[in-house]
Length: 259
Image 1 (tube, rainbow, N blue to C red):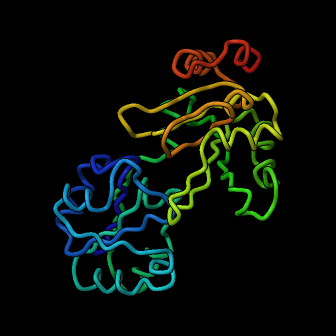
Image 2 (image 1 turned 90 degrees about the vertical axis):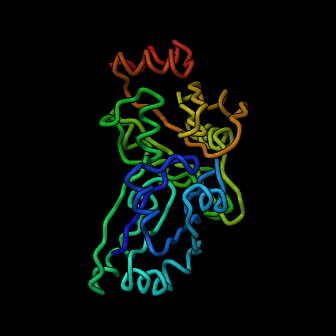
């Protein structure tokens, strides 16, 4: 058996009860933190809290050399851990298919995702989100400003009145995380004073949620990672009120977006 377990968003306590049980019952536990990480804890703290040893694999160790994981699952019960949900954003469908090719049973224990947290914390309705996008560091895409793919996604969503969730680039191996103010500064070059919402430290006891125009957000300090941005589309009356009351949005910014 190979069980994919999502660790949730923030620390060693963010895992579900079902995930915790699968982890503690496993013969071996593997994890990857190159796509994201739990910023509120460390691997040793995870191991101590759950009473297990965790073998951390890098990208090559998961995507190019998965046999140690699959061999462990073929011989007993193995767990594969990721931050968030193992099949959303940090998708590991390829590893699951490789297990099936070898006749290994698989199971998925889901974890809370940044997408659901963004909707919950901002009050923006989940079904009113369009396609999500990722804003990379400029050095990562070899250009300046915002990539065309991001502009196209935001534009397509806006044309349909939908919100855009903007994931911010992560270089976990270098402990380098794009911040909401950096992202807002980049996006302001394309969208100037457009309404946006910074969602930071989701999953922690004290998340930061701030709505303002991009220029204003670019001048704010939002604290430690992880961060993301939401670019709202048309707003339902309830969404408008939520942004004002829960995220401090200036009323002048949300009034003309209400449908």
